[in-house]
Length: 216
Ligand code: G3P
Image (tube, rainbow, N blue to C red; front, side):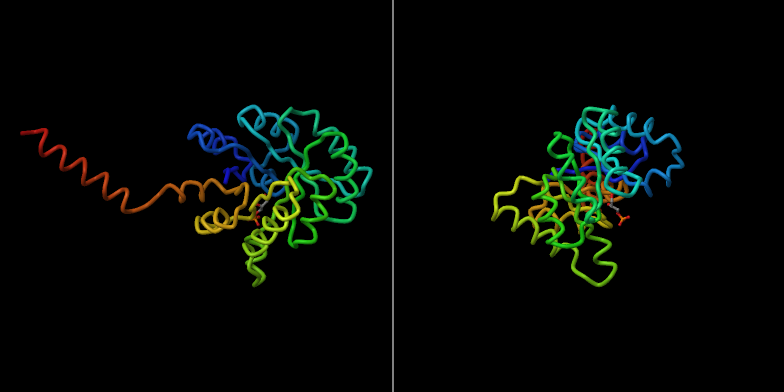
């Protein structure tokens, strides 16, 4: 399972990329606005320069034609940009048109197996299954990831499954076991993934023991 960062914070993205394990980034309008970033194009271009892999940027208009027009424009901003299109009826039509133009699409706000299946058939490169938001309303978000992975595998669909709306490190564990191709995680969760109190205690003890012998 690959790791993407789910953020529009350039410092966090730089830091994650420096660690050598972040192979992509996903943004959405809420994440962009959280950073107070007004120049959408400049921000996406900056992120695309830092990240070695795909960077998802979402359309921020409604309707088939406006979405197609905006997506085509965003697709020119960088060679590694991926366009996020919502899992709606209009979105499906947009995905079908753009995928034939070799524009990479991440179908976002995916909350059902049917949505994911239709997105894959329309030619989406990725579908983003929103785990945390399903958990929030009392569903098992990760069960959906598992189902999508199984069905895509059964029908040999090449669309990759992104476990999104990740809220804590355990989500990453279950996403990996479910066979998600990618987990897109907030920076805080990425940091939590590497931390373990026994590792910290072990390092402290090894260094203390080493100092005892090296001072003899
Ligand atoms: O990038 C979309 C998704 O990961 C958002 O997560 O926490 O707002 O549900 P969240």
